[in-house]
Length: 220
Image (cartoon, rainbow, N blue to C red; front, side, top):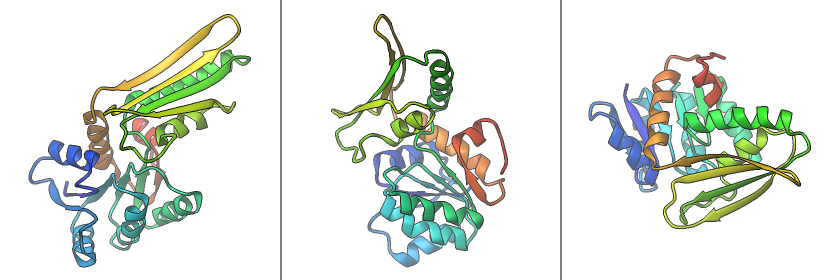
């Protein structure tokens, strides 16, 4: 598997690169990359793993579609129009998008759905904590977890220190409270998950995929 990393100079990009074998890493795309360099990398890669910015991936995704290069994207902070446009390229190449590549977060989402179905009268709140360099607030993972619920939860986001990712959901009534949480100890869990998804996506037909498709090994 020949991998191009978009956002190679960022925290997640560096983590992905560290986990790849030398013969898997084709090259990286950063803000300093020139247009011809980017096109050559996309063309010569089996898959692009993106942890960059919405502006950056929107420039790259059309090239991925042009050369039928699959994409695994973990960038968050899309506007709704940009995300719709981003998804539209999946008619030409497989795209797997996830705000979080942790299997634990996927399992947490399943627990939230089943818990809400039982605790119908409880108030729901989600607190997310991330490092102080993270731009989007709430996090993409928080928005994903909230989307799994029928009721709109109250959300609070903290950007402090160097925390990789911490998500806590509370179900609270007048007399009791249930807490479901997920804590990431480091970024390796996200990078490892993205690489596993990349190995899977290169064998899929064009279409838009999510983490649930990978976990359940489901094709479009």
